[in-house]
Length: 456
Image 1 (tube, rainbow, N blue to C red):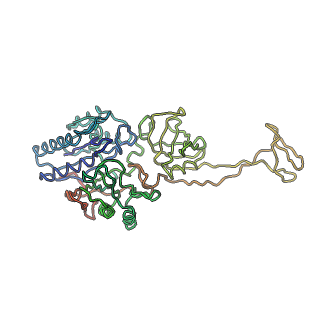
Image 2 (cartoon, rainbow, N blue to C red):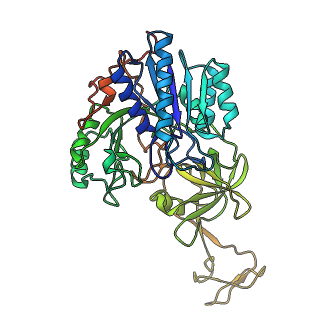
Image 3 (tube, rainbow, N blue to C red):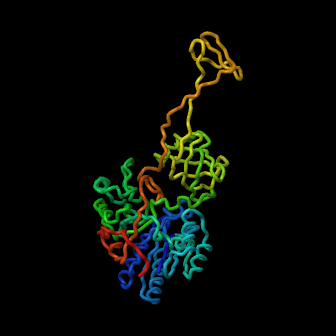
């Protein structure tokens, strides 16, 4: 059976993944439940305005021994969800949601729903209707959208990564986190290049440690789950518990799914640069471009360095692919796409224009006025037919893939050079590979990811 959750957090605290860990702990103490997969952390459309932070939903896939055990799991999850969210303040457009489905979730209707949620905008009715048509049930408010959409996340052929998350003890919530920068850098330096977005070297910051009031101590990401526990050496605060998630983070999962430009969508557009990049006060860069949907403003925010610097090097005629969120405003009459990733496919030639040389004496000629050609200031030679010279200018930009630096990547953006995993998680699944109820992280086997099946 599959149980999905979303919107269990709120702006003042809480976390959907933290709730999933508490549910895992509760089910483990009761006994009788076996995980059919690692807990799934599914990031959905990052441009949705109703998200709290990273627009994450969680799915637990369980083997249940009969209908009574399955019903008990659902009732336990529901009660825990209401207990977890019961004391939080009311927020417009938010409300925890849960979706339940028995059987293999990888069905065309649900897979389509998941893909639409990665790049488009869904409503509660269509999400709930898709699950109910497949025989599932939904409970709660707006969170039903993410809960339902994530049920079919990470099918057998889909790329995935891992995140090992350490959670804080309740008495530490709201206080400064203790994650040692130097220790984290030391761990990173000893690992092969299979981890990403954990360290921001430019700012001297552990990017794996959030800054908000949520109960996450740190979340370490990579393609090597058996090595991620090494980062525990950087924690100078004792974790309450750990969960290892299989995730679509940093896989470019929304790439190519939506090419229509409309508010809050996450689009992939093939574009040709039309104008010279403009740098706005504050350092943001705007590039006017032609897309299959008409013209649009591609915006590169100052914080998205070095992507922001790359944008300044674009020139009219350049061919690019841009991925990003469509903003709901049109300050210059064009839709605004906040770019997270840029693929420069082809560079247009750029020329410098110079006055021609005098054919008599070799001096540089001067314009004689509009439509009157050029004249030589040295010998007096004049010609209406003379034309300016064009000299090719070497480009400082090269075709390639460009993103913000590591530590600044958005949740779904793949770092340059990362290749799809091409592997599947193992079964039978042991709870201790994914969940640890104490200060030490879980330790999955070294061969994790070589075979996978949802069949018993």
